[in-house]
Image 1: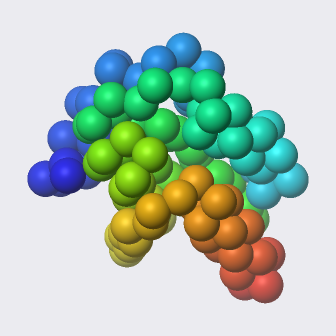
Image 2: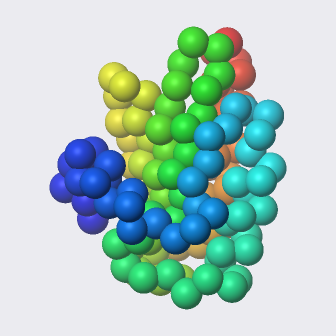
Length: 111
């Protein structure tokens, strides 16, 4: 697991092609499709970031990283909005999609 946000930022150079997105709340569909494709077709290595997403809604910008701890067994989702950070470990990409959608809904309520 990354020790700090700086370490996560430093690790972004190791991401595979097509895994970086800049998106607004209405642009999550390509991210979700990417997650589903990656889960099925990409051999993930431990310590590789699956998604680096900058989600902007209203005046709030949140960085979201999905970190592969153990391929096909464990993924960690990191949220960081500049002031607060949150992380949750999951055992499937389907759970990650649910968390992303729930987070977007929460942001839309705050907007």
